[in-house]
Length: 351
Image (cartoon, rainbow, N blue to C red; front, side):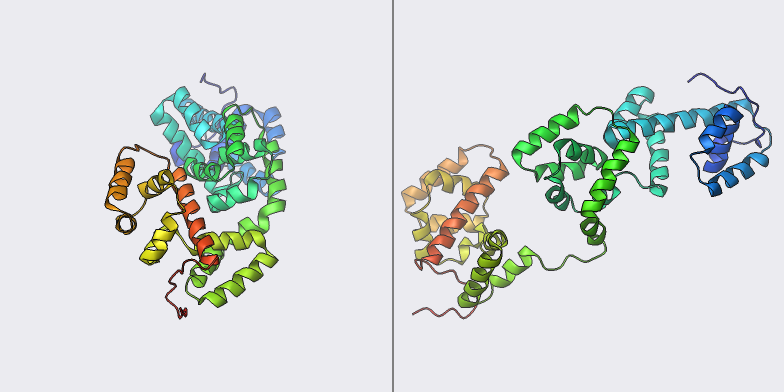
């Protein structure tokens, strides 16, 4: 950046890094001159103006090179904030690395991060929340709004959020994020304010309370109660909140719980499952589950199943989990019709 110092700056000598942030602000304002500085000061509150004025009034002369270093730092941080408003932290990092190199970019980002710790960044509440919860909250928002939020999350957080969105929405959000146009900080703040009004009760309270209860906790309890108690609770849940009831039922018997079934029950389940589905499901199963399945098949069928698994090649975890859930649904259907019994560790009476 070209040197810019039209006005002499009476600041005490010293290196820029030894000055406070407020002293650096005062230095930049004096260097810019009274006309421009007076316009800038209108954006500060009264207390800040008084403090800056005090710093200006107590300055002693500073070396021109030091002044230019401060102005250069101001310029870099201003550009970094501009990039931040445009596309988030990752975009800022990429632009700064191209402009200044990796080492200088890291220094600028470090200063920027230090500033942001004192002044909260846009969508800070979303960064503090559980990413899966964020996905659930924002999936009803406009894709452009979602892409803007993701731009301000850490990459690992954004990855979890986008993975929890519906597939069609994932594509649209990804496209908009990749082609995002410049967004002014005022617009970003307006969007944040609207979302704050909608979700503040959830986002701002979640971090202050321990995670207790929930669908998983209820499912674990119901897995251990007797069948009649479980049936009574589930039936009432289905009447009051069918969607919640379905979520609980999905967690009440997981694929690994197949080992809880007796041999007759496993054989009955296998008659309902296609060979290709069973091979895919066992691709991601524990050795205990695999051996229990093989034990309830003929030697020839077990050998063919092993061969199918070995020749299958890499598969997506999502596909494995889907077919495992399909088999779990078979188990629950057979239990509901009374064809099999799931051992729950309680006092189920079998006659």
